[in-house]
Amino acid sequence: MRSLEQRPLFMLRENEDALDDMLADRRYEQVDPVTLYIAETADLTAELKIIDAMPSWPPLAVQLELWKAGGIGPARVAVMNRVTTRQMSLLGRSGDAPAGTVFVALHDDVAMVHALEVSAEFRRDGVGRRLMHGAANWASVMGASWITLAVTRANEAANGLYQALGMDQAARYHYRRAPERFS
Amino acid sequence: MWRVGLAVCLAWPAHAVEFSLPGAALSVQIESPGDSVRLPRGRWQDGMEVTATEGAIRRTIYTVENPALTTLQLVTPLREQLLEAGYTEVFSCADAACGGFDFRFQLDLLPAPDMYVDLGNFRYVLLENPDSTSRLVGLLASASSTTGYVHVTEVADTDAFELTSPAQTVPEPVRLPPEGLVANLIETGHVVLTDLDFATGSADLGPGPFASLNTLAAWLREETEARIVLVGHTDSVGSLEANAALSRRRATSVLERLVNELGARPEQVQADGAGALSPVSSNLTAEGRSANRRVEVVLLSL
Image (cartoon, rainbow over all chains, first blue to last red):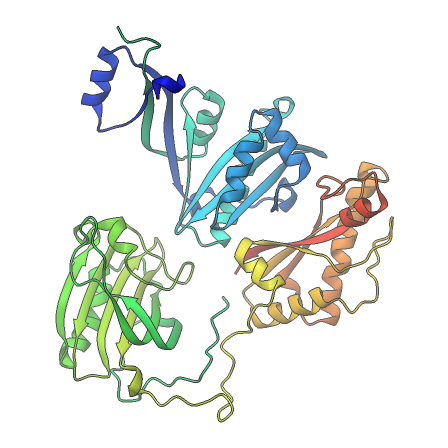
């Protein structure tokens, strides 16, 4: 791994404090702390104009552009395409403008939301909230009891949205990456 | 909900145990003449594989509109009837003690939304009686905030049945098989009606007939609980306001065709318009604009 100039990376879950402490002692830096949010689908569904969160699969060109502008490029979209269970993307709007997009996929009883992106110029306009309700409405029709997602704790706007929507924090994890050189 | 139609008409023998569950309604029943099903005989342990039992399988869901019932109260009447009929209890457990999530996903239950399993609140009972037609019976009870659910899985020997060919009997079709468009709609919640024609600037639907609308209407007539919204889209020629209005009128034209001529009930269908908001193709070419003038269907509930 090191010969490929890659640095060892550990994923630490909540019950792995001992390992976490050992890695911290060895100057492994903490990377991307993540929170997993969950809600009962029924608690997140809402009456919505369908065009506030318009389903489309595959995603429309405008959604790919919105994702790209938010740093979600073709590689991430390719992962969405590889999902073998039911999948959907939703286009959000602000007035007459495409303003946000989200991906959602099913696993049994659980709908997983991914890549919620709201265009910078339309933030704080309820686009993200409507897309989350749209995702829950889709999940509900598909029969999923739960809706869940993972978000980095550094993303304050997103964490604020999911908490305001009443989603519960189900779990946390983070990574630790080896220092550039071992001492 | 659409149900899997049976290739052959299968009658569960009359002398099989007849259940009754006070206050409950039989919501779904699906029989398969030859299939396999997993019915665990113990709690879930890591790495375990539950052996599937083969035979004729009947799955039934009973629902009770009473949020106060516990899972124990839900299974008890059926369990007692079975014990009285000579069954012995092989195994029973409740939620976490069964092995929670992993245990639940070893069970081959009919899917949501017909069945609901709260992973923190379910109870499983397996009973056996080699002398009965239904030699194995698995009960799974759970409850949502409004409704109690009991899923009954019965296994019988396949040769206990007289299979009759469809030519001899004309069984009431369980449900219309969803072909193409409808299957897609159920599977993904969304489908584009690709065979409609609208001229640029016009909300009038061509005379048709349109195969997509005939199929959709037939399904709506059958699935009286299904609700959809039709969403109209335009190309980018014209003003925002004009396109928003035009797209809604297009969707309304389709709604009127479905309701007035093809027998869908008005409460099942809504219409809305997205204007030129979501083009599927480039508005720079005639083909692209034609593809962008479309009506899509979104499933609201089933």
